[in-house]
Length: 77
Image (cartoon, rainbow, N blue to C red; front, side, top):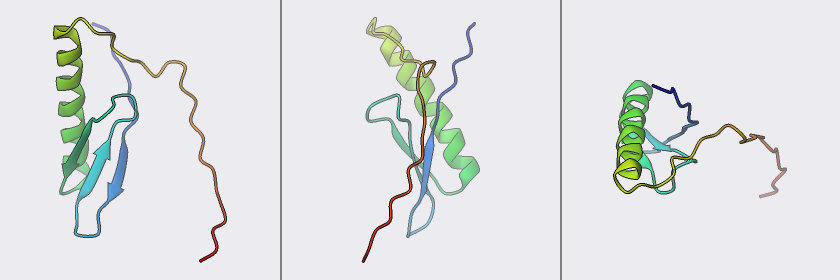
C-alpha cells in the first residue's frame, strides 16, 4: 500500500472550532471543534474522497510536484 501525503489548511472560526480545507481535492472541506478533531475529520474526508475517485475510475491527485509559498502583502486599512 502506498502512503500519500496531503496538505490541509485549518482556519480558526470566530464562533469557535476550525474549518479544514484540502487544496488537492476541490470542495473537500470539513470542520472540527478542536485542532485534533479537525485533523481527524480531514483524514476521514480525504479517505472518502479517494474512495469515491477510485469508484469512478478517476485519477487520484498527489502533491509530489506541488510547491508551497507564503507571501506577505502589506495592506493599508
